Image 1 (tube, rainbow, N blue to C red):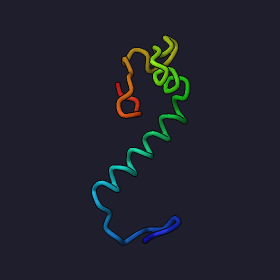
Image 2: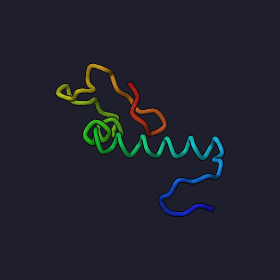
Image 3: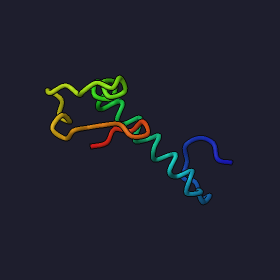
Image 4: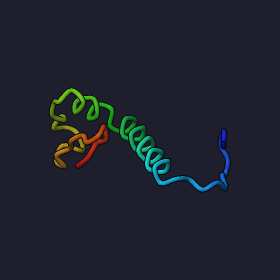
Length: 66
C-alpha cells in the first residue's frame, strides 16, 4: 500500500479514483465557494451577489452542481 506523496506505479481501482475525484472536488468547492456551499447545505438560496446565483446552483450528494 502506498503512503505519502509520490508518483505511484500501482494501478488504482475505478472506485478509488472516483472517491479521490469527489474528495478533491468537495474540498475545492468548499474553499472557493464557502458561503454558497453553506447556504445550500442549510437548504437556503445562494445570495444574489454570488457569481453562482445565475447558474441556479444546488447540491447533489454533497457536491455543488449547476
